[in-house]
Image (cartoon, rainbow, N blue to C red):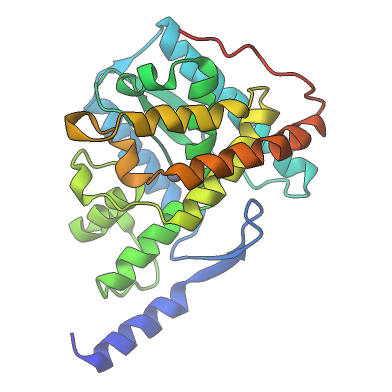
Length: 277
Ligand SMILES: [Zn+2]
């Protein structure tokens, strides 16, 4: 693409970027699309994934995923309400599903659509481990990290977006959507979260799990176990989008007392037993 048309493209993109302060990060974030444009596509894609997958219903572990998800959602709502952000979750339609699949992954799409794969459960090891993953993935969604990855991918590809974006209408856009939200089964095409997005999701996720009554000390242990599985064939897919290292684990440990202090503001003085399964 010629420089001039590139500049025009960026200009057009600039026109339609909306800028808002995210309550979870306190940062101005830019997104191409508003929730009412994005969520219908998200919900549609989510249902598509479910229809093509072996969704486990009514088992103890499927109920556990739902229970943890509901508690994390309540924690998010309580935190937002306490911090003067009533209504932030109005358009959310929370849903928590467990897919019977060896893939070691879990994700949350815009609007609160969550999937856990059974393959991640042995590494989660406990309900508290599930809460650590759930808190982290929900945090990415609440902080609009997917939208930001999507915007970055648009700019990289020099795509102009105009007016009323009908996200699902063309394949290229849908491809970017799927890459940005980790819906694709081909991990090679998925975009990793940046280091700063990971730090944000770790911090917010710790708060959420603690306010939901799960011990935040377990988060560092979880990511240690995840890292221990890397290398060779068994590298967890979640690590391809969530780069993890020693400094991250140290940060999680350092942040755990802050998360406990935050939870105590909501009357949480002690945490549920780890609950290994
Ligand atoms: Zn992450």
